[in-house]
Image 1 (cartoon, rainbow, N blue to C red):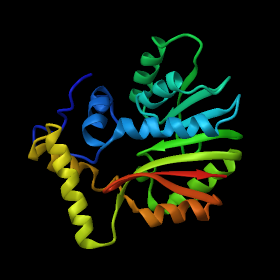
Image 2 (cartoon, helix red, strand yellow):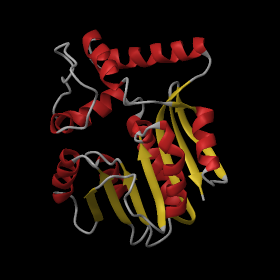
Image 3 (cartoon, helix red, strand yellow):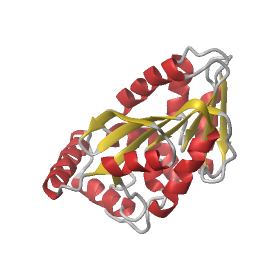
Length: 240
């Protein structure tokens, strides 16, 4: 795994983009930037193992380098399950395919380069978005989540993990401080932390816990729960 040193030179010239350079270090970036990243994947696996049906299709929107689906392919026990990763970054999909090529035989695993906002999906058993929805413009999120609802079979589920904000100013500051401390303990320097925040400022726009739940409810999901939260990160399950 290549180490993430993209922001160590103190020079940010553009907004964050999922380039080939980012893809090369993305696995390390996730491990060092997302609190309890592996725990959330394992909790997602527990939910999926109970709620998926034989022959279902599981989509991972914004699949990046394929880590989540590769773990789930090993972990899930649902018979005849198809796992499909979708991402619009050619570099991410290329790396995911290279990983999958060396994976154990028999897994029905596929990675597709496509725009998740227009990707045709129907009768899905489950759709995952791990830290993906936050990169869509807020104005398009209601329509996008409504499309997810329509794409699911009855009883299908959406799993969404996001960075969130609190509308309580003091608590929001504290949560951000805890997160910055987390990144420091993972070896990021002050320059790296500052530069990455600047690069993400215009492209990552988080909602609050309540706003995410409302988004899912207004899209038609009748059952919405938070199944994980760490200060300013949260994961939701919504069932059609």
